Amino acid sequence: MKRVFNSFYERTGIIKDAGQRNVASRVSALLVEGTILFSVMGTLGVDTSPLIAAAGVTGATIGFASKDFGANFVAGIALSGHESLRIGNEVSIGVGTSVVRGTVVDWDTRYLYLKGKEHDLLSVPNNLVLTSVVTHHNAKEREAKWTKNEREWKATVEAYEKQTANKPTDGKSG
Image (tube, rainbow, N blue to C red; front, side, top):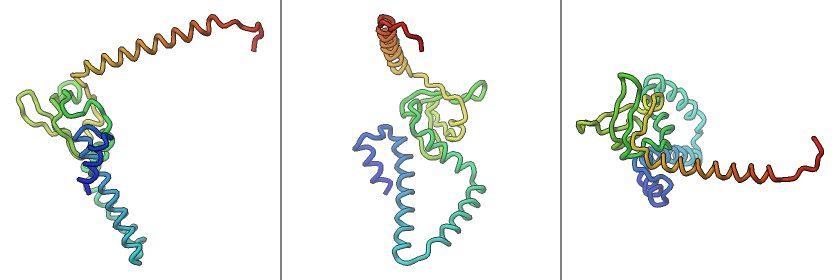
């Protein structure tokens, strides 16, 4: 099922980055598979309410036992739209003496994988990435785009101000 979502996201261009596609495909597949399972069971006459209650208790127990895994999974989903974490970007994560720097080579629901200076593979937990400062080092292209957009915005504002400054008023105060 994951492959179906992965190829769909790739074909449609909805998610261009391979790492982000991987995370989105896993999450989508889990949601669809769970929904199908409970629908089939309900159709076959199985009372699913005790299963849902048991799943809730089991989920809470597993959640407490594996809170780091859960935190990294949720952080992976939250980071899926973060443009600076796309494959090939050079990033630094953290501040001060605890900075990790490298080129993004992959990421999944638990870790962001960076290639370090000496070509070593660094696995950074997604939760750490989510709660840390992320510096995108090769953002020159993006900066140029922002500058262009800023110039366009200023020109639009100036044109609007000129237009409203030249408008005659009817002398009434409101």
